[in-house]
Length: 305
Image (cartoon, rainbow, N blue to C red; front, side, top):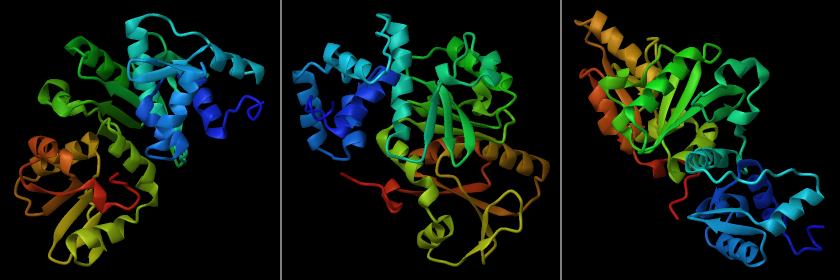
């Protein structure tokens, strides 16, 4: 059927994504077509033939696309014309692209298993991200969100007792401040990640990075395994290293508590993180800690084009 209708495998994958997540940012279609330019031609062709149509900077299914999906037994519910609903879909679709051609699995909020039903009514999470069998409950804070929304999000995270790991995607880091206890909840990990294409690409590549070798390339020195439970690695000169490419507010809180309770400690600690995180981390971590930042392009697999 795909050949009959002149639909390529990638075209059909685009339609399938839209059947599940309702919208796709046009530039994110490059992840499906695995090309930096040609994907635009394919998207325009789908638009011209009536399979998809534009919605602002996104594409959504059109009549011919819905018919194509129905022929293979894929149901599609037409989008509700409600701005708040469409805004939520926008956030979910953006994070769902992590699962395209990667080992990351994304489970949208409407597919969360029955055991998590207690969080479904009026809750704020957008779904779950599964990376190598570790589950992260995912939230999203946009620039438009007001104080009451973030308070509700904080309530949700504290209520999600069956989860130890969280990822909160943000459009800027202004929400990390004392007003919201720096978004730390006493969990194992809470990562604050700015939602942009390079950060999402880095997330896809994280498990393929040899951290030890990467740190040795940064420091140009031998890296040892830490003998201190608050740090990951150690330099011969006694400096401890925490590798934190994305802001982990729980780890920062543990560091701060250590220095608060051990004010005379002379342990030297450095946090290795992305450049975009440096200012934010410096503002919330104990001033005895130093920040060593790196550019995304230090890491393998990140394409500058």
